[in-house]
Image 1 (cartoon, rainbow over the protein chains, first blue to last red):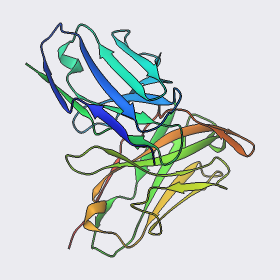
Image 2 (tube, rainbow over the protein chains, first blue to last red):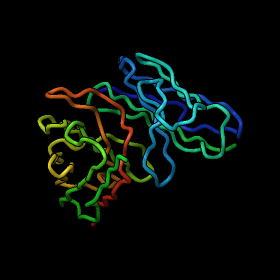
Image 3 (tube, rainbow over the protein chains, first blue to last red):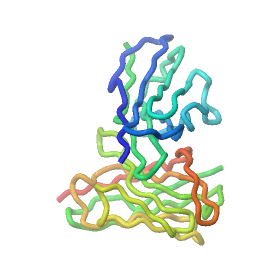
Image 4 (cartoon, each protein chain N blue to C red):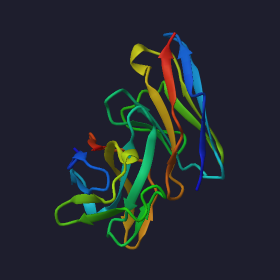
Length: 107
Length: 125
Protein backbone atom coordinates (compact mmCIF):
# COMPACT_ATOMS: atom_id res chain seq x y z
CA UNK A 1 0.00 0.00 0.00
CA UNK A 2 1.11 3.57 -0.66
CA UNK A 3 1.72 5.57 2.51
CA UNK A 4 1.10 9.33 2.50
CA UNK A 5 3.18 11.34 4.96
CA UNK A 6 1.71 14.78 5.50
CA UNK A 7 3.37 17.59 7.43
CA UNK A 8 3.03 19.48 9.60
CA UNK A 9 0.24 17.89 11.62
CA UNK A 10 -0.73 21.31 12.91
CA UNK A 11 0.06 24.83 11.89
CA UNK A 12 -0.62 28.17 13.55
CA UNK A 13 -0.85 31.22 11.31
CA UNK A 14 -2.32 34.70 11.16
CA UNK A 15 -4.88 36.24 8.84
CA UNK A 16 -3.05 37.40 5.73
CA UNK A 17 -0.24 34.85 6.02
CA UNK A 18 0.81 32.39 3.34
CA UNK A 19 1.25 28.76 4.40
CA UNK A 20 2.53 25.56 2.80
CA UNK A 21 1.59 21.96 3.61
CA UNK A 22 3.60 19.06 2.25
CA UNK A 23 2.70 15.49 1.40
CA UNK A 24 5.13 12.71 0.50
CA UNK A 25 4.13 9.40 -1.08
CA UNK A 26 6.01 6.22 -0.23
CA UNK A 27 6.28 5.47 -3.96
CA UNK A 28 5.71 7.37 -7.14
CA UNK A 29 2.10 8.30 -7.87
CA UNK A 30 2.63 10.50 -10.94
CA UNK A 31 0.19 13.37 -10.39
CA UNK A 32 -2.68 11.35 -8.89
CA UNK A 33 -2.81 13.56 -5.82
CA UNK A 34 -5.75 15.49 -4.40
CA UNK A 35 -6.12 18.01 -1.58
CA UNK A 36 -9.24 18.41 0.57
CA UNK A 37 -10.39 20.94 3.13
CA UNK A 38 -12.61 19.81 5.99
CA UNK A 39 -14.42 21.88 8.59
CA UNK A 40 -15.90 20.38 11.77
CA UNK A 41 -19.07 18.39 11.16
CA UNK A 42 -18.83 18.75 7.39
CA UNK A 43 -17.87 16.48 4.53
CA UNK A 44 -14.47 17.08 2.94
CA UNK A 45 -14.38 19.62 0.14
CA UNK A 46 -12.20 19.02 -2.89
CA UNK A 47 -9.71 21.82 -3.55
CA UNK A 48 -7.07 20.44 -5.91
CA UNK A 49 -6.94 17.40 -8.20
CA UNK A 50 -4.18 16.04 -10.42
CA UNK A 51 -1.69 17.65 -8.02
CA UNK A 52 -2.10 21.17 -9.37
CA UNK A 53 -5.55 21.59 -10.96
CA UNK A 54 -7.99 23.79 -9.12
CA UNK A 55 -11.51 22.45 -8.66
CA UNK A 56 -14.22 24.61 -10.16
CA UNK A 57 -15.31 27.32 -7.75
CA UNK A 58 -12.23 27.10 -5.55
CA UNK A 59 -10.44 30.45 -5.18
CA UNK A 60 -7.03 30.86 -6.78
CA UNK A 61 -5.46 31.52 -3.38
CA UNK A 62 -5.17 27.71 -3.20
CA UNK A 63 -2.46 26.17 -5.33
CA UNK A 64 -0.85 22.76 -5.59
CA UNK A 65 2.38 21.50 -7.04
CA UNK A 66 4.50 18.40 -7.32
CA UNK A 67 4.75 15.10 -9.11
CA UNK A 68 6.07 11.66 -8.34
CA UNK A 69 6.46 11.52 -4.57
CA UNK A 70 6.59 15.10 -3.27
CA UNK A 71 3.66 17.50 -3.26
CA UNK A 72 2.72 20.82 -1.70
CA UNK A 73 -0.44 22.79 -1.05
CA UNK A 74 0.00 26.53 -0.67
CA UNK A 75 -2.65 28.87 0.67
CA UNK A 76 -2.02 32.57 0.26
CA UNK A 77 -3.54 35.51 2.08
CA UNK A 78 -5.26 33.45 4.79
CA UNK A 79 -8.77 34.48 5.71
CA UNK A 80 -10.80 33.32 8.73
CA UNK A 81 -12.76 30.84 6.60
CA UNK A 82 -9.53 29.06 5.60
CA UNK A 83 -8.82 27.79 9.10
CA UNK A 84 -9.71 24.12 8.84
CA UNK A 85 -8.10 20.70 8.46
CA UNK A 86 -6.45 19.79 5.17
CA UNK A 87 -5.84 16.31 3.79
CA UNK A 88 -3.90 14.96 0.85
CA UNK A 89 -4.97 11.76 -0.90
CA UNK A 90 -3.37 9.55 -3.51
CA UNK A 91 -5.66 7.98 -6.09
CA UNK A 92 -2.98 6.31 -8.18
CA UNK A 93 -3.99 2.83 -7.03
CA UNK A 94 -6.27 1.09 -4.57
CA UNK A 95 -6.26 1.16 -1.62
CA UNK A 96 -6.49 4.92 -1.94
CA UNK A 97 -4.79 6.52 1.05
CA UNK A 98 -5.00 9.82 2.84
CA UNK A 99 -2.45 11.82 4.74
CA UNK A 100 -3.11 12.19 8.46
CA UNK A 101 -4.21 15.78 8.06
CA UNK A 102 -2.95 19.26 8.89
CA UNK A 103 -4.98 21.35 11.30
CA UNK A 104 -4.59 25.01 10.40
CA UNK A 105 -5.32 27.23 13.39
CA UNK A 106 -5.48 30.96 13.92
CA UNK A 107 -2.49 32.40 15.77
CA UNK B 1 -26.66 19.19 -9.69
CA UNK B 2 -24.84 16.07 -8.62
CA UNK B 3 -25.94 14.76 -5.24
CA UNK B 4 -25.09 11.85 -2.98
CA UNK B 5 -27.27 10.96 0.00
CA UNK B 6 -26.21 8.33 2.52
CA UNK B 7 -28.56 6.52 4.86
CA UNK B 8 -28.66 3.47 7.08
CA UNK B 9 -26.37 4.49 9.91
CA UNK B 10 -27.21 3.93 13.55
CA UNK B 11 -26.29 2.17 16.78
CA UNK B 12 -25.35 -1.50 16.54
CA UNK B 13 -23.84 -3.94 19.01
CA UNK B 14 -20.37 -5.42 18.50
CA UNK B 15 -20.62 -8.39 16.17
CA UNK B 16 -23.75 -7.02 14.56
CA UNK B 17 -24.51 -5.97 11.00
CA UNK B 18 -25.66 -2.86 9.21
CA UNK B 19 -26.22 -1.90 5.58
CA UNK B 20 -25.50 1.60 4.38
CA UNK B 21 -27.00 3.05 1.22
CA UNK B 22 -25.92 5.97 -0.95
CA UNK B 23 -28.44 7.31 -3.45
CA UNK B 24 -26.94 9.25 -6.35
CA UNK B 25 -28.51 11.78 -8.69
CA UNK B 26 -27.47 14.32 -11.29
CA UNK B 27 -24.96 12.18 -13.20
CA UNK B 28 -24.79 8.95 -15.19
CA UNK B 29 -24.36 6.66 -12.19
CA UNK B 30 -23.32 3.53 -14.07
CA UNK B 31 -20.42 5.41 -15.69
CA UNK B 32 -18.64 6.02 -12.41
CA UNK B 33 -16.93 3.96 -9.77
CA UNK B 34 -18.05 4.74 -6.25
CA UNK B 35 -16.13 4.70 -2.99
CA UNK B 36 -16.86 4.68 0.72
CA UNK B 37 -14.65 6.70 3.07
CA UNK B 38 -14.97 6.81 6.85
CA UNK B 39 -13.87 9.07 9.64
CA UNK B 40 -13.71 7.92 13.24
CA UNK B 41 -14.55 10.57 15.87
CA UNK B 42 -11.71 13.08 16.06
CA UNK B 43 -9.62 11.14 13.54
CA UNK B 44 -8.61 11.46 9.90
CA UNK B 45 -10.11 10.12 6.70
CA UNK B 46 -9.83 6.43 5.81
CA UNK B 47 -10.77 5.02 2.42
CA UNK B 48 -12.84 1.86 2.96
CA UNK B 49 -14.02 0.35 -0.31
CA UNK B 50 -14.70 0.99 -3.99
CA UNK B 51 -16.72 -0.58 -6.78
CA UNK B 52 -16.44 -0.13 -10.54
CA UNK B 53 -19.26 1.30 -12.62
CA UNK B 54 -20.45 -2.12 -13.75
CA UNK B 55 -20.01 -3.61 -10.31
CA UNK B 56 -17.64 -6.20 -11.70
CA UNK B 57 -14.63 -5.04 -9.67
CA UNK B 58 -14.49 -4.34 -5.97
CA UNK B 59 -11.72 -3.15 -3.67
CA UNK B 60 -11.35 -3.07 0.11
CA UNK B 61 -9.09 -1.69 2.80
CA UNK B 62 -7.36 -4.43 4.79
CA UNK B 63 -9.16 -3.22 7.91
CA UNK B 64 -12.56 -4.28 6.51
CA UNK B 65 -11.69 -7.07 4.07
CA UNK B 66 -13.78 -10.17 4.71
CA UNK B 67 -16.30 -8.25 6.85
CA UNK B 68 -17.66 -5.54 4.54
CA UNK B 69 -19.17 -5.99 1.07
CA UNK B 70 -19.75 -3.21 -1.41
CA UNK B 71 -22.38 -3.54 -4.13
CA UNK B 72 -24.44 -1.36 -6.41
CA UNK B 73 -27.78 -1.30 -8.20
CA UNK B 74 -27.42 0.84 -11.31
CA UNK B 75 -31.17 0.72 -11.95
CA UNK B 76 -31.70 2.42 -8.60
CA UNK B 77 -28.61 4.67 -8.79
CA UNK B 78 -27.56 3.36 -5.40
CA UNK B 79 -24.40 1.94 -3.90
CA UNK B 80 -24.44 -0.14 -0.73
CA UNK B 81 -22.01 -1.11 2.00
CA UNK B 82 -22.95 -4.26 3.90
CA UNK B 83 -21.05 -4.27 7.18
CA UNK B 84 -20.86 -7.51 9.17
CA UNK B 85 -18.98 -8.53 12.32
CA UNK B 86 -18.84 -4.91 13.37
CA UNK B 87 -16.26 -3.80 15.92
CA UNK B 88 -15.95 -0.75 18.15
CA UNK B 89 -13.21 0.54 15.85
CA UNK B 90 -15.69 0.68 12.96
CA UNK B 91 -17.46 3.54 14.73
CA UNK B 92 -17.25 6.46 12.30
CA UNK B 93 -19.07 8.76 9.96
CA UNK B 94 -19.28 6.97 6.62
CA UNK B 95 -19.22 9.02 3.43
CA UNK B 96 -19.84 7.89 -0.12
CA UNK B 97 -17.94 9.61 -2.90
CA UNK B 98 -18.05 9.64 -6.67
CA UNK B 99 -14.91 7.90 -7.90
CA UNK B 100 -13.33 7.39 -11.33
CA UNK B 101 -14.97 7.46 -14.75
CA UNK B 102 -15.62 4.01 -16.22
CA UNK B 103 -15.87 3.15 -19.89
CA UNK B 104 -16.48 -0.49 -20.64
CA UNK B 105 -14.24 -2.61 -18.48
CA UNK B 106 -11.84 0.23 -17.72
CA UNK B 107 -12.06 2.87 -15.01
CA UNK B 108 -9.89 5.98 -15.00
CA UNK B 109 -8.81 7.44 -11.68
CA UNK B 110 -10.27 10.77 -10.72
CA UNK B 111 -10.26 12.52 -7.40
CA UNK B 112 -13.33 12.63 -5.18
CA UNK B 113 -15.03 15.85 -6.18
CA UNK B 114 -18.48 14.92 -4.89
CA UNK B 115 -19.22 13.59 -1.41
CA UNK B 116 -22.37 12.81 0.52
CA UNK B 117 -23.14 14.39 3.88
CA UNK B 118 -22.20 11.23 5.77
CA UNK B 119 -24.03 8.80 8.02
CA UNK B 120 -22.90 7.92 11.55
CA UNK B 121 -22.31 4.33 12.55
CA UNK B 122 -21.83 3.65 16.25
CA UNK B 123 -20.74 0.20 17.38
CA UNK B 124 -21.31 -0.15 21.10
CA UNK B 125 -22.94 -2.39 23.65
